[in-house]
Amino acid sequence: MRAALLQLNSSDNPTANLNATLALLREAHAGGAQIAMTPEVTNCVSTSRTGQNAVLQDEASDQTLAAIRDLAAELGFWVLIGSLALKTNDPDGRFANRSFLIGPDGAIMARYDKIHMFDVQVSESEIYRESAAFRPGDRAVVVDTPFARLGLSICYDLRFPMLYRALAQAGAQVLCIPAAFSPVTGAAHWLSLLRARAIENGAFVVAPAQTGLHKAQDGRERRTHGHGMVIAPWGEVLLDMGRDPGVALVDLDLARVKDARARVGSLTHDRAFLPPDAP
Ligand SMILES: O=C(O)CNC(=O)[C@H](CS)NC(=O)CCC(=O)C(=O)O
Image (cartoon, rainbow, N blue to C red; front, side, top):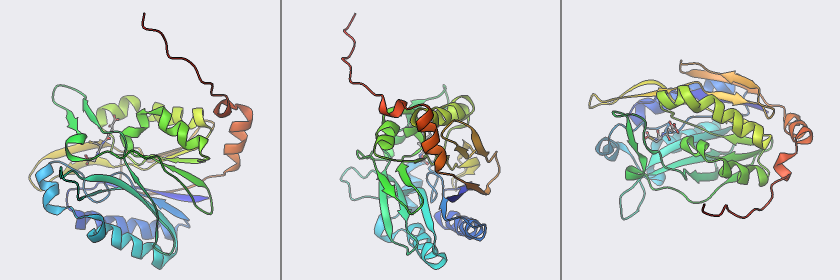
């Protein structure tokens, strides 16, 4: 399976982000990719909710989704859109942070809404309240392609190992973790968490990332960590994209999943246990 990772520096301007994404998808296809994967919030990196309200669309009218479906059909290859920020018809007005797997005929083969919301205070000045703007999903998703069974997730989900356990036990061989990781937590945790998810589940981890300084129309700024990664089922780092936007190609040999799981079969050794008594 030859996969391409897109590393993006998306702004809060969906049209500019789409043009950059389409150019890189063409590059990925020219490099022989059977599937290309984009990072979280490919269409719009949030810097303010009012800003997003002005530019986001719902799924039926979103230009990014439509154009990527058209391109996938034109080129005849698969695209995992790591996520799109989309309007919903929720009464509370919150957006969805949703991944789409697009098939080579342009059809939507799977959707996944990010389950875990990034509501954290990384430092005195760096605060995120994702759940204020986004409505979390509640359904894990695996989906088959001709080359592998994929398990879907997004960014902060990475910190919840039970999600990946469920995906691997449902047969996922490739765990997809598109992200827009913060620079502080990225430097401290990103690589270790990605390697842990790969090793503990004997699965490939494919993690395309947003990178760099994201400038908003209103002058606000946000930074992300970059370092789109691919980790092998035994834990080796197969790809680290560093900090620049672009495309990288990687060949995944699915036999490595079988091999890792044959050497350490912990995926089949889970046992039920009673919770600890309160001391
Ligand atoms: O807000 C958007 O534009 C879209 N959503 C994101 O970028 C999300 C929520 S702010 N980012 C993360 O989940 C980073 C997780 C992370 O950095 C960690 O777990 O340490």
